[in-house]
Length: 375
Image (cartoon, rainbow, N blue to C red; front, side, top):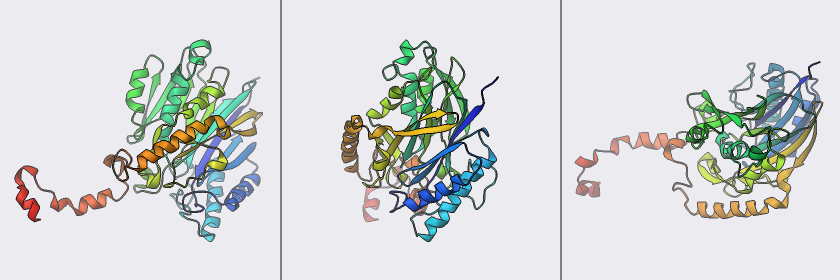
């Protein structure tokens, strides 16, 4: 008899910051709890946050892209938005790009990562949640988890992992995907995921079993809205152990904070700082970007946990290094590489300034220096 499939859905949204873009008011978390508790659709759920983003972690047996589950999340965020507006919280409802639900929450603003699976005898899962960054922030950690033997020794010594993994990569601009088979196509993969502003890892699959190993949210708010709204603050679900990387191998990439796009006004590079939920309130220049790791055991669809992994003092050095990197980058102010390159600034004031000054640009070969000096 086939085992039933369980779906794990992680859906997040920024629907009002307390104070500014720093945190979530406890009343909003309580409202989200009430909304999910009243539903009969779920096997289990947790409500948590990272920075100013509410994260709904839900298990159910209705499969991916279930309209009823997506509506539940949308209605929950809409209810929280009403409360946020009554409290005059900053940016109330900013991630809800539509006035009403239309069947699928994808493309409507909130970020979503879902995976359908058959529970193994033991099913450990790590859910990563980020604030003040974009989906491409997961590219380097996922590469290290599933492709780098210096990080994941299981790729060398675990027979269930030795054949490697397949990476599905999404082109965020043209909305096309391509699948790379690792390790044989590792260099081809790196050509693309080394540009995280355009290409991001959407999912990872085991070559041994074909099972899903990891899935990330890939929604880009600014591309959907056509204007600057906020950073995407993505989520990532990773399965661990027994043919997948061990929990320690999944967490290890964050021991060295890498630089990600986002931070203040979504327009700067900053260190990806691993923190506990309690430390996930970004303050310095609205940052630095934060990542939280919550561990769960799935048991017949129930969520046992969470284990707040980055509360471990073993990550104190990573936080110290992240702050040193932040010190250095902040000294650069509005200059690259602290500020994002111009092609990443299309949803800020750049287009307005460029249009306003267009008539003042002249052919450099025809503009004598003395005429420039008199201007």
